[in-house]
Image (cartoon, rainbow, N blue to C red):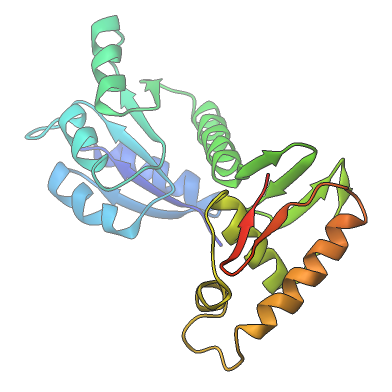
Length: 224
């Protein structure tokens, strides 16, 4: 999928030059010459924004604050201003970087690429939880104990996720079935006993710790 870039600058020559450059780099380019059009183009959810500070009407600083209400992507200011106070205001408004005019187009392209790589890494950061020697990566749906991976089926992992995220809370079989299989499930809560048995067997092969505890007469809870 092509990355989307929003270019906001009231100088048509600059905007056209940037459009041409980023289209050649296979970006999907949106442009705006004023704040009103920029807010409209922001509906396309760009992956990165290049924003001129010195524009008539609403300036780039104010526009940046408005955009931050809708976008979490990197915003790079294009500006001739280099005073420290202006930079501080820009960062306070939500900017991620400054590109000083006149700029080298290849350096700008490299800056944009670097910010996009950083954004991808941020979004791909895994949500991890540690329980002694056990590591659960919820983003990748992976579980390991002492660096030994434990292969779980989709539903088995769903049960582990439910219990471990709510460690200490007791869930009866009916509630687990409802949350994991959903209201459209066509089985019964008895299947939870079989899934828990399989999960325990797989964990027992790599650990002596009993991660899923039975609360007799009630249900199951996570014992991390």
